Image (tube, rainbow, N blue to C red; front, side):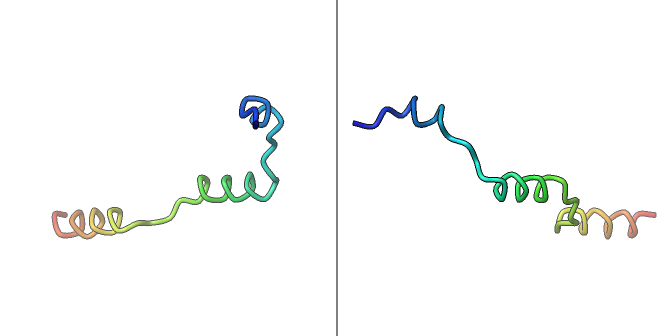
Length: 45
């Protein structure tokens, strides 16, 4: 039977996953909410 606690303790994520995670979280992309806010602010001001 698989000992999940033991397997989790041995788990080490690959560098590719870590690098992808950093790229995703550090990327400041404009989303639709930002675009709508910008348009509304232009209309107000």
